Length: 313
Ligand code: MLT
Image (cartoon, rainbow, N blue to C red; front, side, top):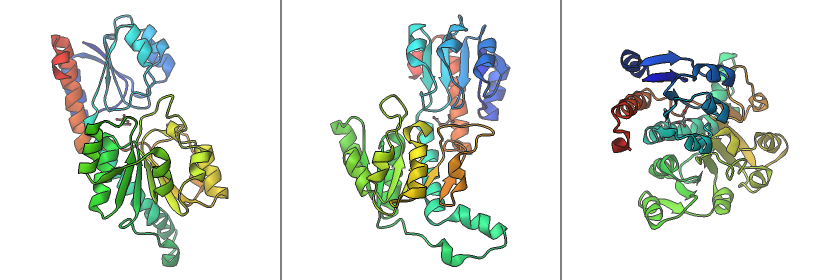
């Protein structure tokens, strides 16, 4: 198959793809370059950071398959792809554990000031008195979007002695039963926001969730609470967060792995604040998970070529 590899994936998977297919590599290429490179391609493999716009799709008359090497679909013009008969496949499950683990990494880094302590120590300071913070155990972990990733976070929080409450978009008896079985209390969005000591965002980005956490929501967070966003930058109004952290008195700090603007050279105004921890969208970057995602990408492309992709889905 003629494949455009538009993002870097696991090196072993790249090797297999390059030995079986005609692969053009262009990692995180801007739209104009994608338009140019996609012309004769039958499949595109990509992650976040690559926008599959209508213009990219229109430039690819032979395109049959979009392989999202991860879970989020917010960087694809889905309707346009469907209207052109391009199939979209993704690898959703493999990101749940690494993103859930990073959520706790960020939470601890934020509340126990690990990143700040590291910076200060490197500068020769020993400010133990400034580096206290709350325990997680005994506190309420609020999960906005208690789906595959969020419910794993809740389950891990419960194991750490936290009370986990979460909201979901559509409550079915199966979803409610699954959450209850993991010790997560189902609540509505406003209750989760109001009761959480640590509010974690795990919901997909679409028209309905864009800036779902805005100034109004931030003003309703619990006094002395913390916020973690490992979902998508667009679900959080970062300007409103900056105002809350600099002028408000409710939110004590925030950790963000995802950002409204991402990529090389972008520095968020939030980076100037000591009570903010920032990472460059590394939620899914656990080696083990990337290996599994790479294997699945190879499998999906092979199945498509053999005409039996639907058997795998
Ligand atoms: C995902 O949606 O799977 C993650 O954001 C990882 C990524 O593609 O960069």
